[in-house]
Image 1 (cartoon, rainbow over the protein chains, first blue to last red):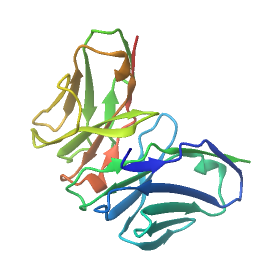
Image 2 (cartoon, rainbow over the protein chains, first blue to last red):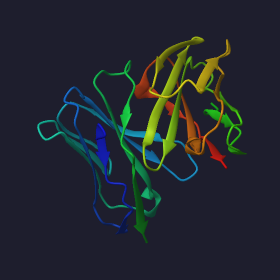
Image 3 (tube, rainbow over the protein chains, first blue to last red):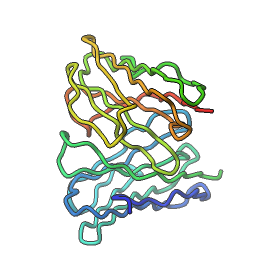
Length: 112
Length: 113
């Protein structure tokens, strides 16, 4: 079993919809959680990161962590066609000096 | 400021051959990490170099090796290629050895026939 599980999709939603992307993990030592966005033929770029449990909001994006359930989510409000990409979750136990464990990514398409 | 560059962008090799991939980090960045990305396994960490020293290593066979030069540029070598080595190989750089502040390059798409 993988340490981080992520539904690969693909996920298609109409423009303007709220998108929910999720990851589950098994390692209770994970404390730092990140979301990356990867456009086609590009490398991943860091979208958001959170520490421990709780919510973090950045514009149309909200990251949510529930450590008791070992479950993290990324919500995208008012989705735009430019949000079409693969979204990867990543996590680590220590901030910075420990390699990240990534999910396999969810491919998202926003339909105009 | 120029981003992370990787060469070549696409590569086709046959089983048994070897390949060398190159990564130029963002100017001033001293840490370079390499990842293998496949649809089934996602991003898997290969190794990380900081100031020419391998600081961390993932669970890949010895056929995968790397090095870093004094100008922080890095190369990754795969010997005796197997079909399963077909993947996108990503390089990421950071100012110091901080995995959470990495900037990724566009990757090299390797196809092994």
